[in-house]
Length: 361
Ligand SMILES: [Zn+2]
Ligand SMILES: [Zn+2]
Figure 1 (cartoon, rainbow, N blue to C red):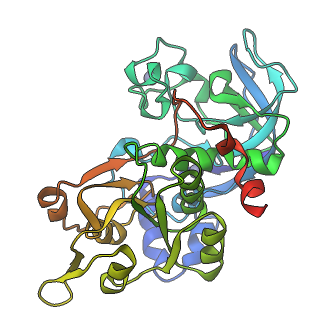
Figure 2: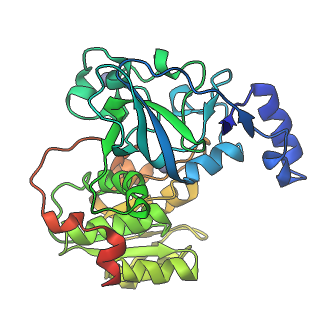
C-alpha cells in the first residue's frame, strides 16, 4: 500500500532549511521529509489492530513537521522527527477495525479513532502503568522515549489505507457521530484539556489567542463548561472571526492588536514604559494561547491580571526571546496543555453535543 512516510535526517534537515529560504517548495519535493512510499503493514500482533482508515485530518503539527518548522535544539522528547525513526503521518483519523490480534478487546468492524496518534505509553507498551498513565494522563507517560516493539520499524499513521495500533490506544466511536464529527474528536480533546486547566473558573474574562481549529475548540468548551465566563478571541482572518462568533466568543478582536486598543475591552488601562513597551494594568483572568509562538506568549503575559494563568496549547518548536518578568512580579501561573488524557469528573452532558451541530442550530 502507499503511505505518506515521514523521515528526516539531520543532514536533510540542514539542506532543506537552507534551500527553503529561496524555494519553499523544497519541503514538498522529493528532497523533503515526507514522501509517498510503498509500505507493507506488519502482521497483526496480539493486542493490536489493523484499522482500515476512512478519513484523516491534517493537523498543524503535521504541517510543522513537513515544513521542518522546528529546531533540532528543541527538547528531544518534544521532537517527533528524531533521525532514524520513520513514521506514517496523520493522527486525526477515523477508521474501522479490519483485523484484531489475539486478546484484542475490539472486535473487527468496530469504528474507532486513535487516542494517541502512536505516542508511546504504558498501554501500547503493555507494561504496568506508570504514575501518569495510572491517572489517565497517557500523553505524559514516563516511558514516552521507550521503543514500542509494535511501532518498529515503522510507526502507523492515518495517511495510509491501513493503520496499525494497540487496542489500548483506540477508542470506539458512538454510532450517532458521523465520520466528519469523529474526526474532530482528537483536536477537540486537546482543546478540552486546555480548558480543564482553568481552576474552577465560574466567572471572569478569558482571552483565546488564535481562532483556528484549536481556538474554536477552546471557545466551544468554554461556552459549554464555563457559560458565565466572557471569552474574548483574537482572530487573524475574517472567516476565523466569523467562526469565533459562531462558537460563542463574547467579543472577537483582530490579531495582532495593540494592548492600548485591547485594554478598554477588558475594562482596564494600558501602562506605558519607554518606547512601545506596554502592558495591561489588570487584565484577563486567563489567556489560552493556541498559537504558542514567543511573540504570542510575550503579549499574553502582558495582558494577564496578577495571579492569573497562561495556558500554552499551541505547539512551537523553536527557542525564542521572551520577557518573563510578568511571571515573577505578577504571580502568573504558566501551564502547558499537551494532547489529551482521561479526566474523571462530573460532566454536564450537553457539552458532548458535537460542536458543528450545536453551533449551527
Ligand atoms: Zn493534532
Ligand atoms: Zn505510562
